[in-house]
Image (cartoon, rainbow, N blue to C red; front, side, top):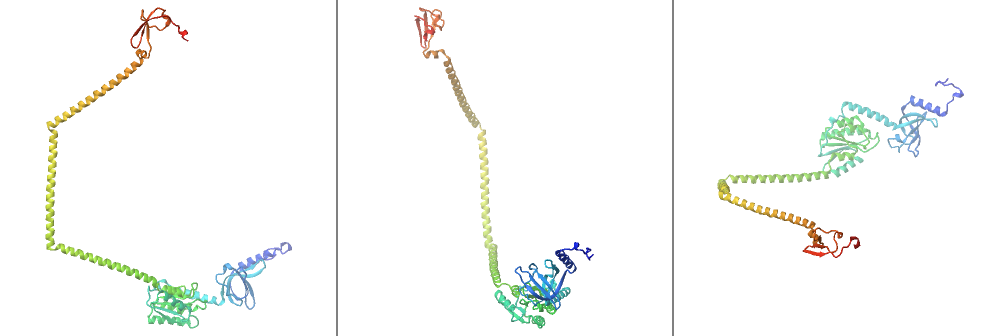
Length: 457
């Protein structure tokens, strides 16, 4: 039996893959993530962007793999021989059975100690309250003088002066020259803050330098510099390194700028914008003054009119005008009253005329005349209706009258002896006397012969 409870016989043998997988699991669970310090060697940069190298010391080495997706910093400056501090997970590359460290973070060996000191000082000063927002001072809107604590020969001062000249050249600048790295830097920077506070010739300070490594920027992570910034009575802008760099000075300062140029952008306004605002303010001031003067002129005119209206002559004129107006109003009222009374009399006269016997007789006469006209019109209309009906009856009677048939050439034949109407030739004989009634007159005739109806065909 082995440690895993397996029988050690050929039949229980496992594959190489299973063995490597088991060892990998044991190592990853047993060791986990660790910091490893050593010297870089056998550095390889394949096209994939991953880095493969070894970390070694005097008696041993370990293979390392730093995959591209875990790389958070540039790797171009890495080379064999660098002293490095690697953080990662111990594992095994199963395909070859290689024992290796999967790197998650890589730092220079010296920077590890500096970062530790940085975190310790940061916690200490934070506990003392040096980073509290309530202690931070507001920056002046337009400083009368700007102090810059930096190296007089560095790129930072050139950037600051260039931006200040472009944005607001009227503000003077005083440079407090200091070393920004090295053994003397901390003392010189702290002394420069004390000098600026004692002279009180500036109302805002910029402290900073250009970019560099953590060691290059370390002077701004020292406790003496942090306390000098906090004890300074002037507002302080920290502009150390590039935007990604962060120092203790940035935390203590009243304002942090990403770069020295950024500090210059923050500390003064844009002169063109100020000129535009000044011109706009001047225009508003002119408009306001004109409006005030116009109001004063109007008040003066109003007071002059009031004074003129209060004079004795104006009072007489005003009362005379009032008297004329009252006279006009009285005349108008009298005329209006007379007009009303005249219209009332006219209405009474009209009512009297309407109620007089003459008017009533005239009304009755007009009504009789109207009734006569209506009677004649109704009689004429009735006669016309009757005449029309008579004509229609006449036409209907004529349409059925035998006389109308006679008018068309027919005749009524009767037996002269009996007076009976002859309708059949067989009822008479030759020699019989007959009469024929025509439309106009009668004819007496003797029948010479008769003709049967069948013979006519």
